[in-house]
Amino acid sequence: MMNSFRHLSYERSLNPGKAVFYYRTDSSEFEPLQAEVTRFRGPKATFSDGYMASGTARAKETSDLGFSNLIMLEACYVPPLVDTVYCRFSLRIIANSLEPNISDNAEATKALREFSDTYRSLGGYYELATRYAKNILSAEWLWRNKVARGVVVEVSTSNLKNYCVKDVQYKEWGSSWGGDDLKSLEGLAAELEEALSCPQKFLFADVTAKIKTEFCQEIFPSQLFVEKDDRGNESAARQFVKSTMSDGRQAVSFGAYKVGAAIQKIDDWWLTEGAEYPLRVSEYGTDRSRVLAMREPTTKRDFYSLLDEIISMTEEMNKSKQPSYSAHYLMSVLVKGGMFQKGIKKGEK
Image 1 (cartoon, rainbow, N blue to C red):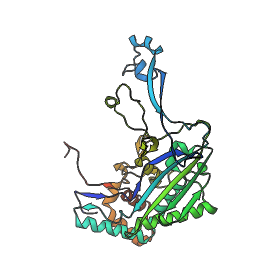
Image 2: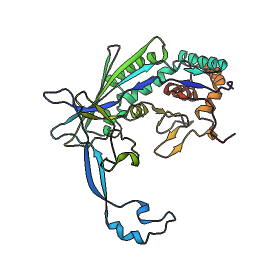
Image 3: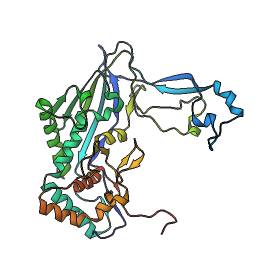
Image 4: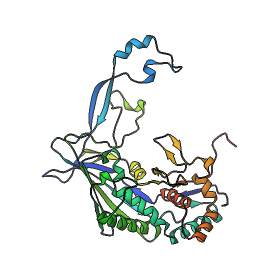
């Protein structure tokens, strides 16, 4: 078991920027895709509109259920006669998982370095890089916007290499890759592996998705979290993340966190026998769609339980000559980065 520590943190190895939506015209290579404010009357529909917390039907308010709620939301639609929308972001990859950024325990630092050295020597980073490359090239970062008539992803790197994958709207996590698509996947994965595992190297990737759209199709950018007290009477309840151009116009966007979350949806190691779908890498394997933690501490497969076993995990890798599922998961969290000190909640002992 690794010696205890109070302070431990890793910097992110994957650093995406905002993903910006735009379109092109005959006279412009970049026209920002803008949001519009929509006002409408919506019917009362929540449980609390008609029922008490106990489940008893409200008496006085029942007659008000026929009235409407006035709603103001931001929405985004492709302009008429525009049939192609682009979404573009940049990604910086740095080898920050080889050792802690901050550590107050020399023995813990030594154990973590030995783990990363062994993992690197056994080709573990290529497995992670391949998974990240799949999510980049298959446009997982488009989220709901991936459902389109056609999606093409193009990637250019600071090593002056270019990759292109077409019809990625059909590619899922378990899809097979062949032909030119496989060459693009392997090429990008090799570049990512080098940047993740070599401290003297770093990589920039410029990623663009070309989305074939329908007439006035709706686009779904990231939403801002807006407190009711911050909205004011004339502010939309739903607001989008935006990027402001030099002329003041704003383009709807994905936040960097949302882009990174999609790229890091690679944890299908949370079941001992191959999970059906991957989770976004996190310390407790959070599945937001089910509101569950698949790596609860009781499973002993959460990040902190495995971190305590890092010395024996390194020894096992040296014996078997290959990283285990747990080793891949543990390293993926270190690549994600974060503060991992073992604090306690206020009032607990």
